[in-house]
Amino acid sequence: MKRCWIPLLAACLLAGCTPLLEREYSTVEPHSSKFWESEAAGTVRAENYQDIVNDLLILIGQHTETATLRLYNVENKLRVADMVERATVEVQQETPMGAYAVEYITSSSQAQRGYYEIDLQISYRRTAEQIQAVVNATSPEALYALLDAALEAGQTELAVRIGYWSPEDGQAQVEEALTQVREERGLLEQPMWPVLYYPAGGPVGLIEFLLDQEVEPEPVDGGAELSEEEPEGLPEENEENFGPEG
Image (tube, rainbow, N blue to C red; front, top):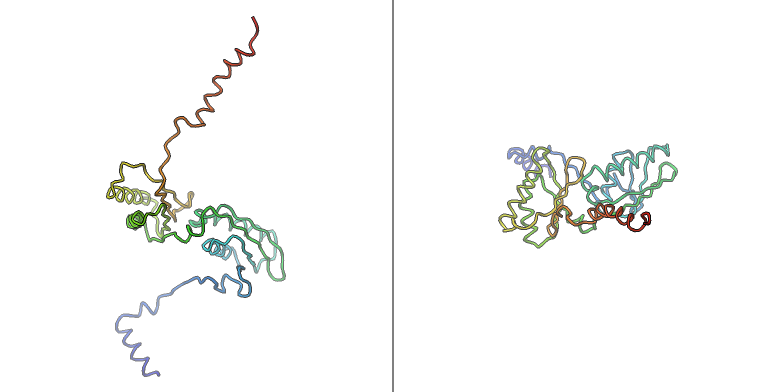
């Protein structure tokens, strides 16, 4: 058996396979023992703050609405509550998928022997189909091809998770891709589509294009203006109906 493997290994090394052999790979399996309790379906485990964040992102990626998290190595209930609260805020406000998909997250904890059991409830503003339809791209340079393919397929929306975002010219690249695809399809005269960036307050990691909607213009005869004009007529009515007689 050794005589069969040695020539193969030598040939691989001579052919330049060394980088492949030395490269490290990292994967997250749906039920990896790192994040899931093997004996309990729908129950995730965590041993520190970052594990909680990772667990939440896994649950969101599967559009899980209710789950149980077992937190180990933490003995103080106040610290547990603080860690979970900070993790839920980070996921919802600072991660692309959390900002895109989640409406809110609630939790309650109970001490068990050796761990804290935390019941999670996640409310979504995106469907499971929308989350599964999110496309991955290495940079905004791929947006033109993705937009063109989405329009060709008759899609009404496109959500793209961006691996690299340049704060200097990222938005300019998005606008360039939009202009190019709209020009080639003769859509420049039509109103622009809404483009949403997630998260809103940090480095962009996900871009959403609403291809069946239009950017709403500033209200002209909207309710806000009517409410502002209404008080102007009140003094005249008061003078006519309640003013002094004679």
